[in-house]
Image 1 (tube, rainbow, N blue to C red):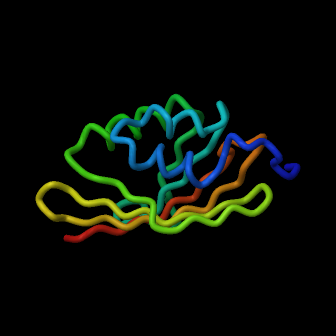
Image 2: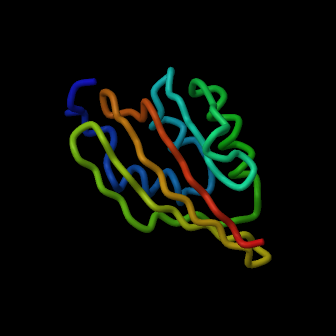
Length: 121
């Protein structure tokens, strides 16, 4: 993967995508062939949930953004063709979720993402 020089991926675009209330802008940040690996209580490291392509990722984001919850970008670091960010979420009933993501970027789009998340139980 070469170094990303496309300004399509930046902190403010990611913030607007995460906090926007719909998945549309966030979905546009993914490459068509992106891969998303999710690790959490139900999808543990030896068997992560893996989504392939923007269509599969989009279905998951549609589900997430259909819920009564807020999303907030806490921290974000972008360097060359890699990025990392922390996101905090809160459901209307007060349950909180924290996620950490590592990204590989290609042409300003997310090519690979590993997301580790935990929530109140």
